[in-house]
Image (cartoon, rainbow, N blue to C red):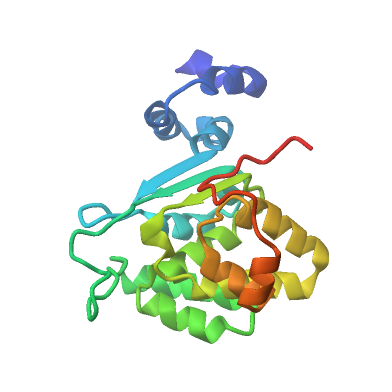
Length: 223
């Protein structure tokens, strides 16, 4: 341990780069001084599944971002899996499952939304308190400024209203932000057509701006 702690950071990064997610998590728990060189690799790729038996730790991770904002800068690749629920949420009268999260965590995330300062913050906060996945994924994506690839499976796209509002607000603030959001989010998740409608404001424009392929994922090109 002593020899590892005395190893230069550049060398530690070379050592940590090929490690598995589990090994990287173990390294971060070994010693505080090892967290800094290991965390960029630990958080570079996020992969969660949302199903009847699995709940993604999205709320807990957002709380970690609130407490340590630099964690969000390490994330480049996000894969959110889950293509069906066994309880028939598509049937009339059945609701989409809610996120199991304590009121304490929700209150911390409400404060984060308030700091973002958007006109739909009140609705966003209401959806957070209602444990809506759309509210949590929208908040998660809003924090990922270095995102290069995003995939959201069917379960995450059953509700997209807030996500669409976020994209529209970015478009209104600055064309440069709009281009960034479209290139890093919309093209990486062409499944979310409901969100696209909020940007292009009408089916007619969507038909005019047809995408060449409705691929589920998009890898950012090098130029």
